[in-house]
Length: 568
Image 1 (spheres, helix red, strand yellow):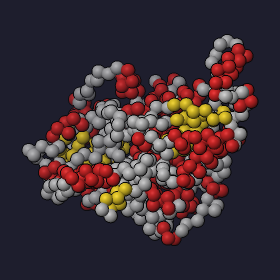
Image 2 (cartoon, helix red, strand yellow; image 1 turned 90 degrees about the vertical axis):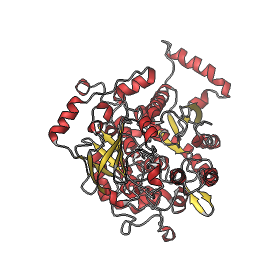
Image 3 (cartoon, rainbow, N blue to C red; image 1 turned 90 degrees about the horizontal axis):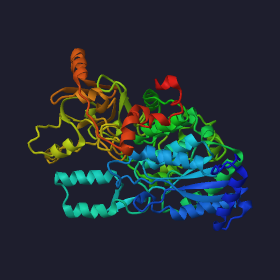
Image 4 (spheres, rainbow, N blue to C red; image 1 turned 60 degrees about the horizontal axis):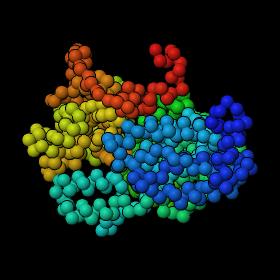
C-alpha cells in the first residue's frame, strides 16, 4: 500500500497525530488505519433518482470491505441525474471527473469504490479514477425492471420518446399517455433499455473495471446486494495486490470495450466517453478505430432500441459475460480485470444457455452482421460524425439526398419545428446548429430533432436529421450526431443554408454538403462565430472543452497538457 496522504503542517509526525485525534469519533483506533482504507465515492442523491436507492448497497459494500480486512469510509461526489440538470448533464461530466480525481488523490485512502449508474456518472468516475490511479473498482446501482402497459413491455426511455411522438401525432389520448407515464420507470435503477447508462456499464465490464455480471443485474435483485458485498471484498484485494486503473484500462481492454459496444448495439454517447477515459491514460482512440471494429463485430445482443429486449432480459440470459464468451475469439482475453484475473480466466466457466438465444445470438447467426455504430466523414464533417444504422426506422434513409431546413439553435428549433407554416416534407433534412460542446454549451441530447407535428399526423415517423449535439442512447431514427468540428468553432455544419442539398450514404460512410469546393471555402471564410458572455464554470467549459471526436474533456486535464509542444 502507498503512504496515505494527509494535510501538510510542515511536520509529518504532527500531521498523523492530529489526523488520528479527529478520526476517533467514528469509533476507530490506530489499528483500523493500518488496514487498507477504502473510500466509497457515494453518489446518492434524491434529485438524481437513478442513484436514490444506493444507500443500502453502500452499507453492504462496506460489510464486504470489513470482511476482507479493510476499513471503509464514505465520501460524497457530485451526482448528476439526466432529466434534472439544466441545460444538460454533459456540461458537468468533466466537473464530476475533476471532483472524483481530486478527492481520490487528496484523501487518505488506499483504494476506492466508484458508485456509478446514471449516464454521465460512470464515465466521469472512471475518468477521475484513471487520472488519480489508485486501486479502483466500479459498482453501479443497476437497471430498472421492465415496465408494462396493457400487456406491452415498456422501456425507459425509448418508450418515453415513442409514446410522446404518438401523442403528438394524435394516435393516443392524453389520458393514455398519462397512464403510460406512470409505468415507464416502475422501479429504482437507471434506464433499462440499451441506453447510455446500460451501455457504459456494459463497456465498463468489458473494460475490466467492474465485477463480472455487474452491468445487467437489476437494481431490485438480491444478487445486486451480493455483488455489492463481493465488490467490497475485491477492492481490498486490489489494494493488497496494488492493481491500479492503468494496469486494467489498457489499449487492448479499450478495444474489448469497443467490441462490446458494437455487439450490444450500444449508445453513441459511449464513443465520446471511451475516448475521454482513454485520454486520461494517454491512450489515443480515434473514430476510425470505432468504425473498423464496428465493421468487424457482429451485433449479437438483441437489445432495444436496435432490437427487442431489455436489460432484465439480458440479465436472465447471462449478461455481459455471455456476450464476452460469444465474442471470445475476437477479444484480447489475456488482459487483467478487477477480479485480479484475465478475461480468459473469468470466462472459463461461463456457459451459453440456448434457451436465451433470441436475446444473445451467436456470432454465426447474429442480429446483424456488423456493429451498431457507423462513423461518417465528408466535407460536412471532416473530423467525423456518427449514426446508429440499426436504430433507423426507415432504412431507406441510410442512403438519402434532401434539401436542408436549418435551425440555428435549440431555441430556434423549439420555436419553429411544429409551426404549421413551416415548409417541410419527409424528404427534407432537418439540421440543428450551435448545439455542440461549445455552442450549446455542453452538447445536449437534442439530436433526435422532433418530426414536425404536421408530418407526424400524416404518418411520417422518420426523417434524416443531423446536428453537432448528441442524442440519448434510448433514442432512435435516422439521426446523424456529433458532427465535428461543431458550428461554434467554424465547422462546415455552421455554413449550411436552407435549401442546400445534403447527401448521406452510410454504406460509403459519406456525409456531404453538395456545393462546390470554391463555394465551401468562400462560405467558411466569411463565417462569423457567435460571441459568448460567460462567467465561472461555463466560461471555463467553453474555453477549454475539446470537440466530440476528442472526447469533450478539458484540454488541461490530459496527461500531455504540460508538454509545451502539445500546447503550442
